[in-house]
Image 1 (spheres, rainbow over the protein chains, first blue to last red):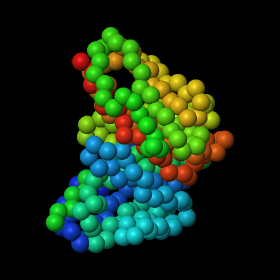
Image 2: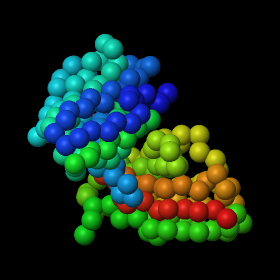
Image 3: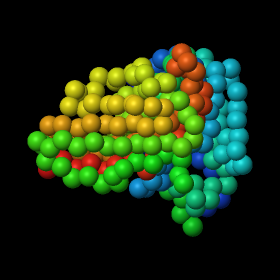
Image 4: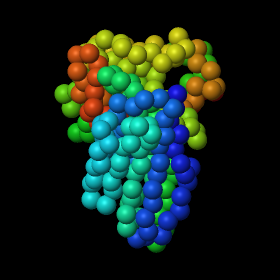
Length: 110
Length: 117
């Protein structure tokens, strides 16, 4: 089953923070996060493996709670360049079958 | 040269036509993927190839026929498509283990925008 993301859409002012959640009904092996700008290819952000690790890249970080089968993406001090649709992708076992979530549209305004 | 290249970028075809989408990756990866992205819908996995072998067919109708002649090239052959097949078709590649497991990021091409008349 497809993971569910929330919120579906969020509008921010530059400098504000946002959290995007990804929930799965199945046990997860890993969670991937991607950002897709309109008319462009999805771009990889980060991968989290089971074990509850947290990763970060500049002002974008993520956590993975395997017990709750959830992952959250944290965007701090948002910039205009953060605008786009964020997708989580989940893998349920030792495969590379990545199932993407419903997507979250993020719009950062000046 | 970009990592994953898809051609054509746009394709308009009738329901009785036969056409092919092409994907080429220059990243030295051994796994390749086809995804479908319809308007206001998430990315939908279609096929997975690991080391040229198809390891996943996500219940895709037979009017879509993939082909992977080598680890760098992936094709999607189309025939007698339906209007609901109009979508953006994305190709991706990644590193993978022989058993198909992967915690490696997938690198996407820019996609082929397909319109069925």
